[in-house]
Amino acid sequence: MKLDSVVDAGFEALASLRHARVFHPQGVLARGRLRVADARGEYLIGAPECPVAARFSKAASTPGGWPDVLGFALRMHTTHGPWDLALATVGGTGTVSRFAITPTRGWVHACYGSLMPYRLADSPPLWLFAEPGPKHPGSASLSDMRAALRTDALPITLHAKGIGGKATVLAQLELESAPDEPAPDAFDPVLNTPPAVELLPRWVAAIRAQAYRGSRRGRHSATGGARR
Image (cartoon, helix red, strand yellow):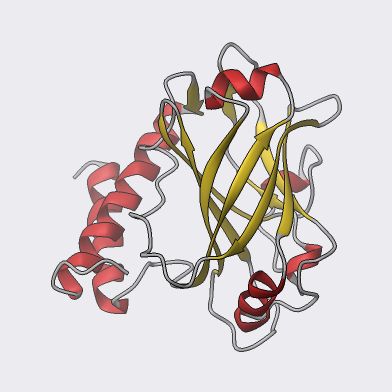
């Protein structure tokens, strides 16, 4: 059996058993707007700004404000179609630390990273990062994040960085609570990318696509097709 088939079947079984995502099963939804910072961002988005949907989550669902690997999923509604990012807290933006998935003690302390690099148009491989502003909660509690989104718009900066050199700001986000909106279809950073965006390396992206596909199928079979 091929590796991608094993990954697909394994994630389907785990998601069906949990009746939820394999990782980051619980989260808080948000909505807002993205404003690009330069001409490259406008080219990728197709406009100076666009609406977004987002989800903050905890990988292991540790109780209350306990530290966890925090997740930030983002869907940008570009003129080219949806562009999804699925970021997790990492040790930093350095050459090694960007690959280290790291538990974090609070949302305000998070450094979210893509782990895998992207090619944006004709760029060299770039890793994407999201940096929260000071209004984000100091604990890792989902309840605290939900309350913060209801109170004020929370800022996040998206930036890109190669192996060397400085980070480049791509866009600024402002997010608020989305309690009455239905959850978007599952975020899929492999399937949902604009034509000028590619997740690298391709063979890892293909395996990751199978994991997302298996997880979606397992959740839907466990809930009779209902989206979670």
